[in-house]
Each structure stands twice: as structure tokens, then as C-alpha cells.
Image (cartoon, rainbow, N blue to C red; front, top):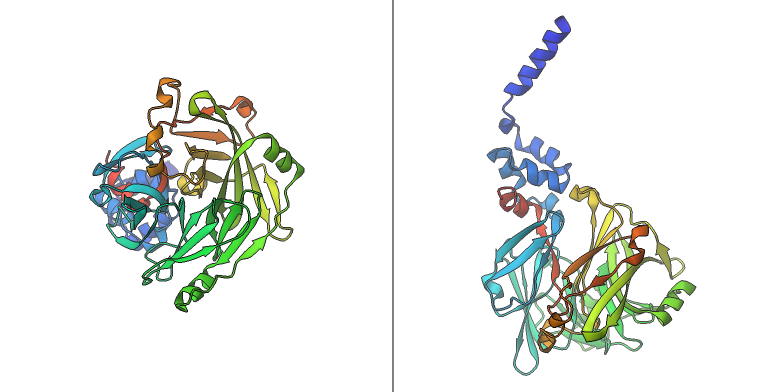
Length: 401
């Protein structure tokens, strides 16, 4: 009887505790250890908890939920966004984006462009959650991708523009009045990414070019038209890769994942009436010691989000979602160097032929049921863009829905 009374008293004490009175420092320690999805849930417990989780704490800067921003909305002041993991949509108000295309992202920053006369682009970096904005110098509109080395709030972040077909690059840092251009020899670039202090560019022959951000900064600060030092690495391919390169049409993506450089090959075929059909994915890791692509059969707890303009790797453990070995992908165009403003003449062509077309899909690595995988892309609409909705914003806005 005594033990039962003690248990009952302890339970009553716990029930009478005002959890809202816990010190903020203690709550921060607790919430920092929770998966992101759980943080969104507990932010609805009481106002005090919601206030703590809803803060823009520096330790939570990298935590966020991958979202898709739908394209084809440049003349609207709101943009339709979709959280695939939470099965939620959101109409995001973006007055500063009216008349501009969303060209890509870096975490929670959007890359916005306006196609102006004489083949020029106006480029700006916008954080739709904080309202911060950075305008970049105008440039030619034939570049197809921008890669950032860090958040635009970081002092020495570098922007790199890429035109893969002509292997032409352009670099900008804060304070520069123009872009520093550089043209490289070799095969066309398929994709580019920033990892561990360097920009990496993937050629169509699977080789890698490396440009250190310190070399870019040094070249721009000299005020001379000097060339930036570039490391060109010949990367060995497996026999399987060589056979696939000859037998299939492949879209190639570079993804930084936990300090490693991943190559994701997306195999597709072009059906009649301009319908793109994806039927397989394979992942490789760059072995820097042997300069060779090694096949990856297990991603661990990492989930990949692929897109022509931006790709990323996210921990499923940090997100708090029970999924492994998954690749989420958007409906990319087959030509890596095309942009949304180049493709308006294609809209409406395939809609009459194939109603079963989608804007995004998911592929499970190592799943035997994926042998007959088929994904038909919605070529009637440009591919949506991945971006990260930060934890504090999700807790303030989504937990109340």
C-alpha cells in the first residue's frame, strides 16, 4: 500500500507541475534534441513553449523542412508551396517576387531572376522568412544555374553562375560591381555543387573540376582579369557506368551529403509527344583517394531531394520521419542548360496526350518493387524548386493549422 501511495503522490506532483514555467535555457536544451517534426507538434502545447521553439536561434539555423515551390507563378504576389513530408500546402506571400522567376535556393534563401531586355538578367537573393534581400549585378541570361558557397548573411559568401554547354562560369562576392568570368576547356558541365570549401563541377564524361573559394576571393580582390586556379580531376568509372552511358539517357546530379560528394544518375527515356519517363536511379560516391565513383546501395538515414536548380541531403532522424533510402525528385527538363524563361513555347503541348503527369516523385533505393518503376513528368509546367522552410517558421505557422 505504501508503494502505491508514493507512486500516486509522484504522479499527482507531475500533474500539478506548470510546465510552462520551466526555464527557457532548459527548454532550449530539450527541444534541440527533438526531431523537427516533434518540435512542430510540441510548439502547440502552450504559448511559452511555442515562443521558445519559434525563436530564430543560431543553433537551429540549419534545421528545416524541405518544401517545393511551384513554378509558373512569376506574375503572382503569392506562390504555392508544398511540403511532401507533411502533406501540407501553403500560399506564401512574396510581393518582392512579382515578375520574377524562382531560379533555385540555398537553404531558406531563394534565387530570383527577372528576364529583362537585351538578354540580361536581374538577380536577387531573397529570404522570404526574414525579409532580407541582396541584389546582384546584371548578367547575360544564358547561364542555367547558380551555386552559393554559404548563406548570403555570411560575409565572404561567393556566388557562382554556370553555363554547362559552353563551360563558362562567373563569380561574384559582396561589394563587387560586376561578375568575374572564366571559361574552361573540356566536356560540357552537367551539374555543380559546393562542398567543404570548394565548388565542384561534373562534366558529361563524369570527370570533376574543382575551384576553391579562397582562390575565387583572391582573384576578385586583385582587381585583375586573372584566371582562377582550377583543379581538373579525371575520375574512374565502373564498367557498369560505362555501359549505362552508352545504353541509356541520363540526367546527372551532384549532391553534398555529410561531407561526401554524391553522383545521382537518373535514367529516363523520351516518349512520343515530348513525354519524359524516368525508370531508375543509381547513386555513386566520389572516392577522393582513388578518384573513382563507387556505387552506393544504402544512404543510411539520409534522404535526397533532387532538382536541376538545387539538390540537398537531409537526415531523416533530424526530421523525425520514418524513412530511409529515398530520393525525392522534381520534374526536371532533359536539357540541363534550359531555364523556365526559355520554355514557355512548350507549355500545353503534352497536356493533350498524357493526363497522368506529375510534378514530383519518390524512388526507394534497394526496393525490389521498384523494378517496374515509371515516372512520367509534367512537361507542361517547369519543375518546382526545393527550398528549406526553417524550424521557427514552421512552428509559428504550421502547428496552428
